[in-house]
Amino acid sequence: MSLGATTEMVKNGGVKCLQDILSRSESAAPNLLANAAKIVAEMAKHEEIREPFVEGNIIPPLCSCLLRKNYDVVVQACRALGNLCCDCEKAREALFQGGGLDNLIKLLEERLSDLEDNDDNQALWNAACGCLMNVTYDRSDIQKAAVSLGAIDLLITLLKRNESDIGLCGTAVMCFGNLAEPADTRPAFVGTEAAKCMVHALEKVSGDDQLEGILEIIASLIENDDMKLEFAKAGILDTLLDMLTARTASWTSQSTPKIEEFDAVRVSIDLLVLLLTGDECMAYIFQEGEGLFFRNVMDTWMASQVEYFRISAALAIGNFARNDHNCIKLVSSGIVPQLLRLLKPYEGKEVDTRLTHAVLSALRNLAIPKVNKSIMLSCNTLDEILPLLQSEMLFVQFKLLGTARMLVDSMAETAVDLGQRSEFIQRVVELCACEIHPGVSGEATRLLASLIKHSGSTKVMETIVQHGGLPCLVGMATSEHPLMQNEALVALTLIAASHLESAESTLLESKLLSTIKTILQETAYPVEVQCNVLTLAGFLTQSGMYLFSPLTLWRSSVMSSHWLVFLHSQVCSYSVLLHCGGPV
Image (cartoon, one colour):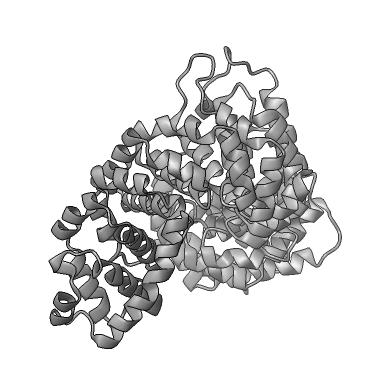
C-alpha cells in the first residue's frame, strides 16, 4: 500500500473504522479481524502513519487480539503491533501500558508448548519474534519487564527449535541484544543456554552486517564475567579463530586493507581479548600455557603482519599476566624478548602508540613476581624501554614508570645503576610535576622513593637531591594513599639518616616541618604512617640543623617527650640498614 493511499485512508477516517472493527474482537468474525489487523500492518510500514494510529487508540484492541485462538488474527496482530512499534516511542509506550507485552509473552509460551513444527507456527513465531524485537528496542523498562516475564528462556527454545530458519534466528538474536542492553538484566542470561545458541548462530551467519550485529550482542553479554566463562565453554574461541583465519589468510603487509574497513575482524579480535578480562575465563583459556587461543597469540598474533593483531597480542598477554603464577610461566616461556621486539619499527613504520602502551602494560604486570625481575633485566628490558620516557604520551609515561619501579624493587644493583643516571633522574623529576595526569606524577615520585630504598646508596640520594627530587618526596608524604605516604617517608628517612650536606639546605627550604606537624596532629593518618614520620623526625633531630632540633620540634607542639624517646629507639635500626646498604 503506497504512502499516498495510506495517507488518504487516514484522512477519510480509516483509523477510526479499523479501531471500531478491532474493538469488537469478542464478537467480530475472525476473518474480519484478521483483515483489519493486516491493513493496519501494511499501513504501519509507513513511519508517518504510526502516530495517528496510536492517537486513534488502535493499540489496545490489537493487544487483545494477541490472545485470540485464531491463527490468522494472531499473526496479523503481531505484524501490526510490530510495525507500529518500529521507531515509534509512543506506540511502544501504548503497548506496554496496555498489557501488550504480557499478552505477547503468553502467546509465545502457548505456541512454543505445541511440539509440532508446522508452517503455521513458523510464520507465527516470525511475526511474534519481530514484534518483540521492535517493542523492546531502546526501552530499558520494557526490556527488564520482558526478562522478568521469561523472555530469555522462550527465545532460547525458539532458537533451538528453528536452527534452520536463518531469518527467525537472526530476529531472536536481535531480541537477545535488546534484552541484554541494561546491565542489570545480563545476570539473567547466566545459567541458560544463551551462550550456546549465540555461538551456533555465529557459525551459521554469512553476511558481514549480521555477523557484526551478533558479535556486538555477544560483547554486551560478556561484560558479565560469568557469561565470559559460559561463552568460552560454548566454543566461541574456536569459532572466532576459524573465522579470523579464513578472513585474513590472504592479507599481507603490502595488501592488507586498513583494519577499520573490516569491522567484523576488528570486533572479533576485541571480543577475544575482552574474554580474558574475567579471572575464571582467563584461567580456562590459558590452560597452564597450553590453551589454543594462548598458543595462537604466541605463535601467530605476535608475529602478524597486521598491526592490529600485534596490538591485540600485547593486550592479551597483559590480561593473561594478572597473577604471579601466570606471569612466571609467561616469562619462562620467553615472552619478554617477543614483547620487546614489538617496540621496534616494523618494516620501517613507526610503532603505533597503542602498541607501545599495550606492551608496557604487559611488561609491568610480568615484572611483579620477584623471580621474574632478574630474567627481565637480563633481557635488557630497562635499556629497551627507557628511551620511551621522552614520549609526550601520558599513558606511555605512566606504564613505563610503573614498569621501571617494578624492576628495581629488591634489585639493589639495578637501583644503584639507574639511580645514578643523571638524565634519567632529571626526566623523572620533571614528570613528578605533571599536573594533567596524577598517575604519572604519582608513579614518578614512587620511582624516586623506590630507587632510594632499594639502592641504599648515598650516591643515588645525592643524584636525586641534586636534580630537585626532594620536594617531590615531601609532597608525596601527605598523599591520600597510605602506601605512597609510607614510601615517601621511608625515602626521606634514609636521606636524613645519610647526613647528606647537599640535602640539608633543601630540607630547610622544603615544607617538611609543616608536613611532619600535619601528620602528627591529624588523627586520620594510620598508625604506621605516624610511626614512620616519628622515625624521620628522630633522624632530623640529629642533623644539626636548628630548624629540626628537638627543642624546636617540641616547642612547635609537633611531639611530646614520650615521642622523643620513641624516636631514638628507631634511629639505630635505620642506621644499621643504611650502613649495610640494604633495603628498608
